[in-house]
Image (cartoon, rainbow, N blue to C red; front, side, top):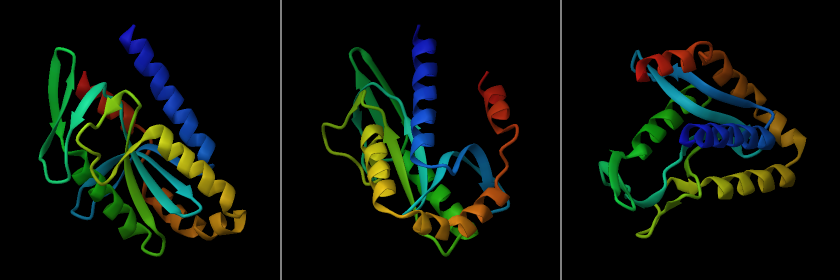
Length: 175
């Protein structure tokens, strides 16, 4: 049941991201600038620039800050930690900026509504619904001409991306 619910949520997230932009890359690699590659969950072209999105579906109280190496999630009787996701996000933003230096690039870690930040949200954290509302409002406020101005930079990112097989390779490592 949990697997089915998570799969439906993932489809919902993907569908909602595709409603805010016609230009979306999902589950891809880009050069990291150090002779390696870095994995992206989502990047999209918005009227304000390129937006990098990492999603987190955790349930419970999340304790994390900009300076903490690990964040903790506490839910009922469970407690687990994960690496501070902001550092990886900043690396992803830098990778896109290196390919497309003439466009604004911003990054967000979008938590689903199941997470609670009782001690405050770190700098790059946003709730997924809030992010979608923000991107929808930005899209409505901007003209198509503004969006088209970002297409040359977006096309450089698309040209540098390796999409085929990334999801399959990552699933193979996790099994």
